[in-house]
Length: 403
Ligand code: HEM
Image 1 (cartoon, protein in one colour):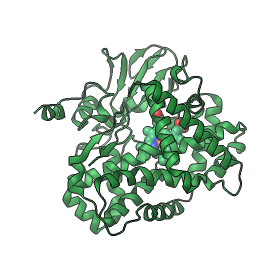
Image 2 (cartoon, protein in one colour):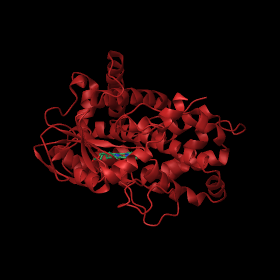
Image 3 (cartoon, protein in one colour):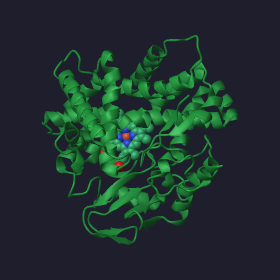
Image 4 (spheres, helix red, strand yellow):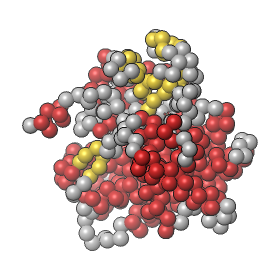
């Protein structure tokens, strides 16, 4: 009974929404009725309509970190701070601006046909047992492993280190999210593991970058692009190479999971997609709009200023609800309808403005190869829903399937 009620109740606030079973009626209402508002109880502003979200993401006075605390204080003094502080994703300084172009060009320069072929080969390697249908827990292992291992391979990370890399990424990611958002709570153990993971990733990628035989095409391209734009700090290059792994790890796994759920919930659509795998591409695009991974991001005011008609003060935080904006009727007609044949679909799932994601083609492609593989192999679709929980996160929606 309680489960039933909680499933139907709105999330407590916008940072509780990504782990909520179904936050979309709530998001839709916010987009339509509360385009930009102050959440008094939590002390943050919320941008929910497509117009407000775009305004915040393209405003020069909305920064990815507060000026007074570019790196969360709790991370200072360890390797996790080095990673956090150098990622272009979390930087609004001049070096970050130059480096951002290099990070994007190197990624966009990767040959997507090669990426698809690599992902396909890796899927076959990961899936050793061709006799048995995927179990639910094996599905989850596969959805986390495949995409990040493709990125790791493009950087030149040897296969023998993949398991360690995934552990280190998970540890760094958990500590960074906890320090930046308080979700989950930062414990001494989480912090220690985060620093250890960050240092181990840094050491590994540094050693690969010094070995021309080992250095993969994406790391090579990033180093070249960085040199071309005048960024000569090696640590910046290493950290932003790690950034490709950090940014893509949970995001691509989550998108695979949400796409599988869309298929599990719509058996007729699933039959159609199995019969015609070219439908996977528009399906993934519609999942990115309707059940997105990055439910929200956040910004901080660099100074007092007006946003969406409201006066905000220096340092105030704005939660930017990408998932709500995607449900704004101003962006797409009939936004709550799941329609893979939607014409001129628009969404803000890859952000907007200077920090927009450079992997908007790369990531869905790897997800497409992964889901196509799972469909070919057969999945216990009927078991997905029953085993579903969402990872605890203030911003990212990650379906987990556990037996
Ligand atoms: C489904 C998968 C993904 C989603 C939904 C996604 C979404 C996003 C979003 C919303 C942002 C902007 C955040 C903000 O403005 O606050 C972002 C930034 C970024 N993403 Fe992705 N991402 C995905 C996968 C990836 C992958 C696979 C990579 C790299 C291989 C990547 C690299 C980056 C980078 C480098 C940035 C920072 C851009 C900048 O600040 O200049 N992303 N991503």
